[in-house]
Image (cartoon, rainbow, N blue to C red; front, side, top):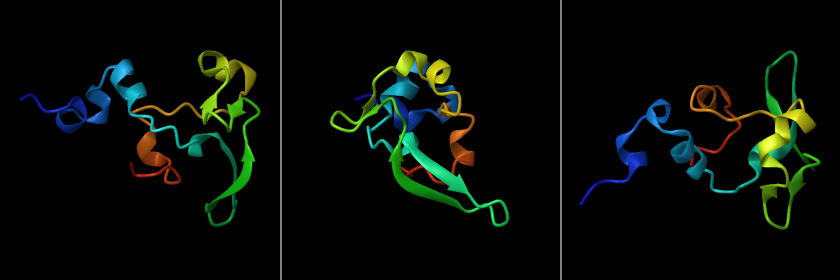
Length: 89
């Protein structure tokens, strides 16, 4: 039996479809955060992006989110390791 791709590939080896399928719908990437300028500590709030649908735990315009919300952070295999506030799962 072949092992699932997430057990055999590094993040940067995954296709876009494989990468997108890893999302567990937690919504943490849609929360507004503040970063302390002195310490660099990132503090989450209970406020979410205007495009976030809390009932479905999804973005209402995922394909165009960066155009509508310029501060939206697009998670990629190349930046996920630097975003320490994201869950490990």
